[in-house]
Length: 118
Image 1 (cartoon, helix red, strand yellow):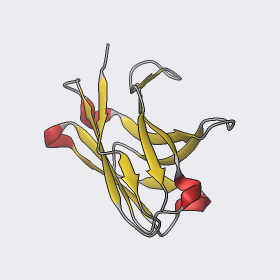
Image 2 (tube, one colour):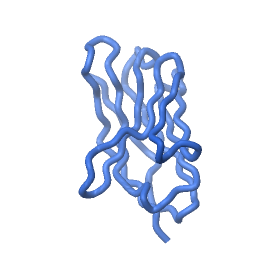
Image 3 (cartoon, helix red, strand yellow):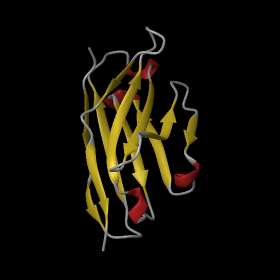
Image 4 (cartoon, helix red, strand yellow):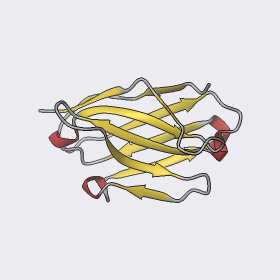
């Protein structure tokens, strides 16, 4: 069982920045593809960004050029740097860890609120 603990959310004004962190409790963190998803009220959960074990990244079109995903394998942590935030980025953000052992199996964090408002 892998536990994922998110931190760094909160309230920010439009145009501001936040950095989300997700710490994972696994000794084989470097083998996991890690991702950030978000879910706004009334919407389905959607992929924001993911980063593979080799460091390849992928972003939703809506966040390209504004968000950056990165990982620190020594700290078992994945980050999401969010710049130039917009009100439409308001959502609960979830950390995801795709198992390198069981295809199709993933772990989820508890979610963290990000609110972009003036």
